[in-house]
Image (tube, rainbow, N blue to C red):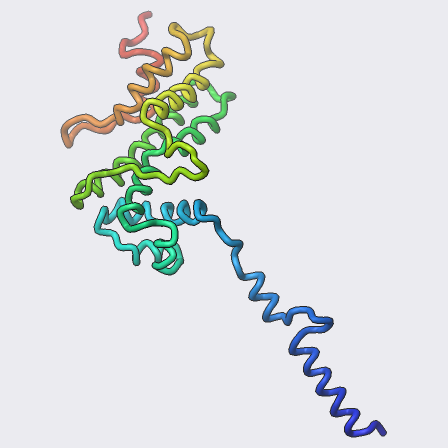
Length: 235
């Protein structure tokens, strides 16, 4: 029969090993805790995450949105906001800058397949441009309605310029549209560059006319008129 003291010592050693993990390994609870922890964000990444969470709230409440609401939407403590933003005004400015940034619409335009017919390419382009204008208008309109003039404040990490200015943004969008016309260059009456310029003017009209009984002009209608004109083909 095994010595009682020896049994007790082995039992205590086994319990200690289970509590701390064999060979110094973390316990299952500790490992699980480590797995649940998200990777640390850089200041720029955290700013971007907060802005993305805040945008729908700013579009709904304008300047009346609170940092507590933004924190809840982002799933963070309210104090975390002020580690990367000086105050709520800076958050609102960053939201306006993000809404006005052409980065997203440029990505969408570049992703349009050139294998599609030209008309289909242009319909997709108008839909992307309209969505961009609607996002920007919603944020700017909400801020103005709540008594705050929209201001585009964007962080400039590592010394970069704070976003694209309006002229540069317009040129970037025009270049992306030019690429959509390029495959059909030989069939165009004007150069792809000129077509893109005229088409952008039509697309930015937003297709809205005065009067409640006037239906909004659809992207397909704009493209059809652009490519084929208003006159019916003569037999």
